[in-house]
Amino acid sequence: MLLCIDCGNTNTVFSVWNGSEFLATFRASTEHQRTADQYYVWLSTLMQHKGLPMDIDEVIVSSTVPRVVFNLRVLSDRYFNTRPLVVGKPDCLLPAAPRVDAGTSVGPDRLVNTAGAYDRHGGDLIVVDYGTATTFDVVAEDGAYVGGVIAPGVNLSLEALHMAAAALPNVDVTQPQNVIGTNTVACMQSGIFWGYIGLVREICGRIKAEYDRPMRIIGTGGLAPLFDRADGLFDTIEDDLTMHGLTVIHRFNKENT
Ligand SMILES: Nc1ncnc2c1ncn2[C@@H]1O[C@H](COP(=O)(O)OP(=O)(O)O)[C@@H](O)[C@H]1O
Ligand SMILES: CC(C)(COP(=O)(O)O)[C@@H](O)C(=O)NCCC(=O)O
Ligand SMILES: [K+]
Image (cartoon, rainbow, N blue to C red):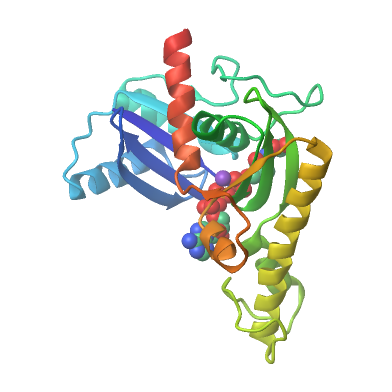
C-alpha cells in the first residue's frame, strides 16, 4: 500500500491508498522535531485502531516545510524499507512542468493540487486552497502550473489580529449572522469572513479576466465548504484533492521510470 503524506505549515496529513481508495486518513500538527520513531508509533497505533495492517511498501511526500522531510525520509527507509518519492525533488517527475520565472520554486502542495485537479477536471482551472496560506493555483489547458496568488490564510489573519491588538481576543472562523457586528468578536468574525469572501471572489475574477479563457474554480482545504455555503464561490469542492494529486504523481512516476 502507498502512504501519502501532505505536510503543510500547520498540519501534516497521512493517507493510506490501496490502489483504488483511501483506507484511512490521519492528521498531526506539523513539528519538525518529531522523529521517525515517533511517527511510527503514532501511525501504527492508529492503523491498529482501524484494524488495518501496516503493509506499507511505498511512500510519497509533499512538504511545504523543508525541515520535516528528513524525519519522514527516515520513517520511510527504516520502517517501510522504501525510498520515499519527494515532490519537488529532481528525481520526482511531474505530469507537466510548471511554467514560472527561472529560479522560482513552486510550493510542492501547489504542484500536487495542480496534478490532482488536472487529473479530475482537465485544464483551465483555478485551485483555491485554504491552508496556512490561501493559495490560488492556475492550471493551464495542458495541466501545467502557470502561476497563481498567495494570500494570508484565514486563521493566520485572525491570529495576527489577536497578536497585534491588545483588545482583540482569539476567535474562531464562522459565518456571522450580520455584517455589522455589535460586539468585538462579531466584528472580527465579520471582517474575516466577508473579507475572505471578497478576497477570493475578486482574485478569481481578476485571474479569469487576465487568463482570457473560460475557467472552472475548485475549492479545497478544511474551510472551503464554510465559505462556499455563504456565497457559491466554487464550481466544485474537493476535500481530498491534495491526497488525490499525490496518488496521481506517484502513478506517473511508476509508469515513467
Ligand atoms: N474544517 C475546518 N474548520 C476550521 N478550521 C479548519 C478546518 N480545517 C482546517 N482548519 C484550520 O485552517 C488552518 C489551515 O489548516 P490546514 O489546511 O491543515 O493548513 P496547512 O495545509 O497549511 O497545514 C489551520 O489553522 C486549521 O486549524
Ligand atoms: C504558499 C505556501 C506557503 C502554502 O503552504 P500551506 O498553506 O499549504 O502550508 C507553500 O505553497 C509555499 O511555501 N510555497 C512556496 C512559494 C510558491 O509556491 O511560490
Ligand atoms: K496545503
